[in-house]
Image 1: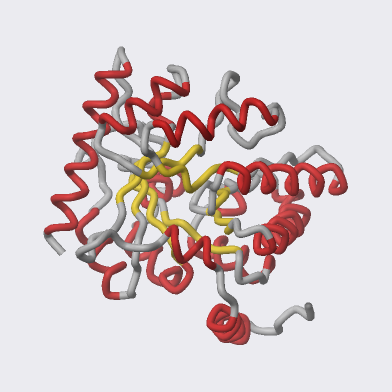
Image 2: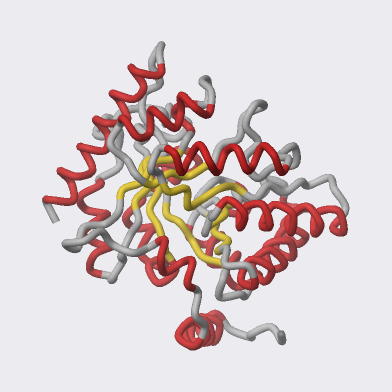
Amino acid sequence: MKPVTTRRHFIENTARTLAAVVLAPAVRAAAPEPGGAWTIGCLNRPWTKWSADEMLDSVKAAGFRVIGLQTPTPADPFVGAAAKRDYLAALKDKIAARGLEAFQGRVQTRDNATEADEAAAIRTQIDRAKFLGLRVLINTGTAKPEAYAAWYRKMALAAAYGADHGVQIVVKPHGGVTAAAPELLTCLEKVNHPNFRLWYDAGNLIYYTGKDPIADLEPLLPHVTAFTAKDCAAKGAEVMTQFGTGKVDFVAIFRRLKRAGFAGPIVVESCAVGATAAETTANARANRLFLEKALAGI
C-alpha cells in the first residue's frame, strides 16, 4: 500500500476503509450490554500471584463475565511462546466451565529478535488467540527509539494477519513509542491498517507522562475501541490501586467518550492487590461498582 502523504489524508482514508471492511471481532468486543450499558470486563493482572484456576474463580466472584488474559505468568503463558496445545485446550475448558468469556490477550514482541523470527512468533500468537476465541490482542510497544521503525512493521504484519484470522491488534498509552496522543497518532499513520486500533488508558498516561488524560484523549477519539480502567495519582505513582484515589476523572472521560459515540467495552486492569486472592477479589469488585456508579452519572 502506498503511504499517505498527510495526516488528514490518512485519517480520511482510514475512515473510508473502516466503513468498507467488516471487522466482526472488534464489533463483538465493543458490543454494549442489553439496555445500552457498556460492558465492563476485567483483566487477569490483579491475580498474577495465584493460579489460573484461582484467577478465573476470582474474576467470576468479583462479578465479571468478560475477561482479558493480558498479563502472562511463568505458569500461564496464555498465547505466549511457552504455550502448548494441551495447555491452551485446558485453559479454554477452564474458562468455559466458569461461564466466562475471554476476549483479549497480549501479543508480545522482542526488540532483539530478527524480523523473520518476530513474524513467525506473531503469527503463532495470533493462531493461539484464535484457538482460545480471543478477538483482540494488545501490544505495549517499545521504549527504544532505534527500534520504532521495526516495531511499526511488526504491527503492520500483525494487523494484516490478525484481520485474516478475526483478531484485532491494539495499542494503548504505555510510554516510548505509544507514550501519548502524538506518538499514538504516529503509530496509526505508520502502521496504516484498519485492523490496528487504540485502547485508551488514562492511568497509564499519567503514570508514564504526567499529562492530562482528557486533553490527550481528544485527538484519539475516532480510533478508541476500548477503555482500560486504571487510576494513578502522579507520574510514576502506583497504579495497582482503588479507583477514586488518583487523578483520573472517570465520569468526565466517560462523558466525552459517550459524546464521541464510543460503545465500550471498559476493562478493569487494576485494583489494590491484597494478601489473598479473596481480598484482591473484594477490591476488584469495589472497582467494578465504582465504574458502574460513574457510568450512572453520565
